[in-house]
Image (cartoon, rainbow, N blue to C red; front, side, top):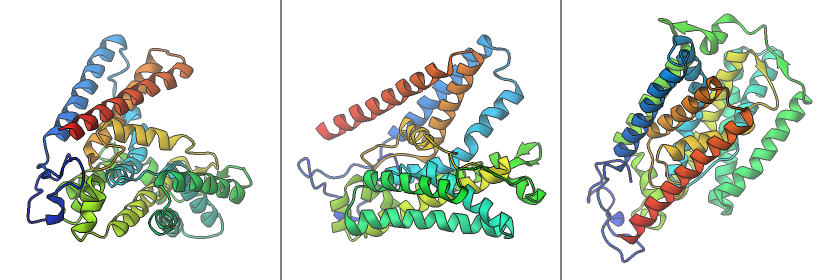
Length: 343
């Protein structure tokens, strides 16, 4: 586990003994997470230094601002996805849910609802989708991958059905609502500030909260967590709801930013989000990961994308390069997990 570092014998006695691999005691959290984060920071810094020589436009405020804006809203989804990956789940429907929240917000606003009320209803509806996925996993026993894959298709179909495949123009949204997506505060875009607050709070809570330690226990060894008295089903369910709600929040902010709702928006977003979390150290097998690491992973992808654009690399090859980066991250994750299992 990357954190919490305060794992101790008195917190969850059933977790002192592993249920596999000979039953050795669970070791305290290592510095692996911070090492991964430091490594990502060094890679990002090296890329920035290299690109500053390759292109005079890379380190300009306009380009830096564009990079921050490009992943700030998506970063909100990454936070929810990272926590879900830590618990051992995955959600392929987040891109569709982001779009669904945009469509619901737009539809309700055009029907006469206040945009803030419409946005809250959209987030609640997104959370309900997460609840249905969580129910399929915890009640029926479906795999997270399969359940979320099905809902990815269902929710995307709902977006197309509600809009008849036609983008909704929301140019009449009030200025105070548009502010959360387009406004600035102290010269910094409001979107970036919202993103930073969510990242700082969620990272602190995951590191320090004894309640959310159950997320790590469940992801590390589900049987041991169950034997120690943790309600594993409840943990999985509510983390799945949290992930969908974070996607809904991102969808509402996207609505405010673009002043429109397109039924095809968010296609492929789930792959970018999962890639960022894995690059940042979240394991596909559960039990490890950090919010900060996932955000750094997303920042790395953003820097790579910006670099490729400035270097005039073909957009077709950009996806190939991103895929290679993801493959490298998953391979490293697999090798690290293999080494841990052998110890």
